[in-house]
Amino acid sequence: MRKSRFTEAQIIGVLREQEAGGTTDEVCRRHGISPQTFYRWKAKYGGLEVSDAQKLKALGDENRRLKKLLAESMLDVAALKDLLGKN
Picture 1 (tube, rainbow, N blue to C red):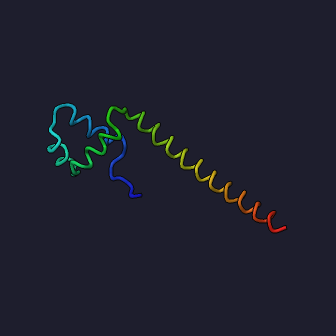
Picture 2: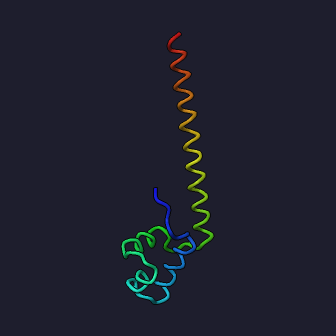
């Protein structure tokens, strides 16, 4: 997945700027993003504070790490079952 040019704090700042009274088109043009990107950010980060976004990212990283550990352990179990099945 491609890394964003903007951090969570910057994205929330852009959303706050629009909420403060700026038009969506004006905010998008100023920051060099498309309206589609703005609305995608709004769906994901709307109503979040910067600390909430950081917690969300940390939880996502932890979830990714745990899924990787689970997949590795499932491979180990499958390999052991395969070895026991041959005997």
